Length: 238
Image (cartoon, rainbow, N blue to C red; front, side, top):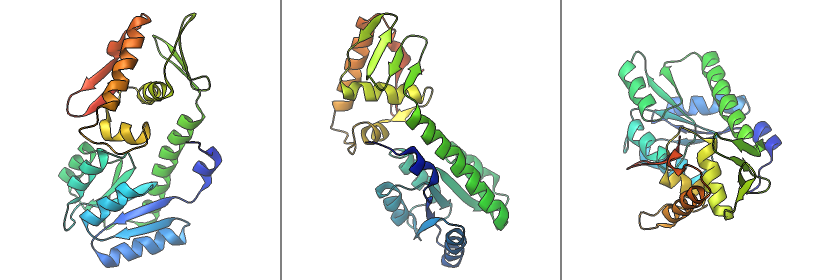
């Protein structure tokens, strides 16, 4: 899949609002639309999760108290498949809600009622940070670790003068792990971002690709233990 960096950075951000208070939801949508954002609105947790998983959003604004599926459970399920930035909307002074939100993978939070100017500035800052990260990942073609170098233009892995032969899928998998070093990447996320298909617990192809990557690294004299299996969560390059 090819990306246009200019489009990534300049296109209007698409924001999903999941808030059961219809008046507030409409107010937020109108405010964002007036400031150049595209919005979709959902009013309960289950509908919100389906939309968040089915569409490419730049940001999700997520209320905590939702009918059908609360915000924390929605976020937990979303993080198993997507890394879409999420700003949680919490009750004023609800410190434990903020802690729980961050623990489940929230990127930011805002207490209700909120100041409109602060709200827009926080959204702008979060989008700028995440979009810059995306652009950096898109533009970068070389990755250097203490063990080897990855060249995305050549799809090559080199250690000194030696060059490893990986299949395009194996290289893409290794690149995804290395570029997000230290992060645990879930199987659903890797299936979607690397293999371009939905995760199935009965599908062992990702494990097979990773096993081959480890075997080839070991054969080349590279310590493959840097690729860790985090049981019940996914994989991580450390």
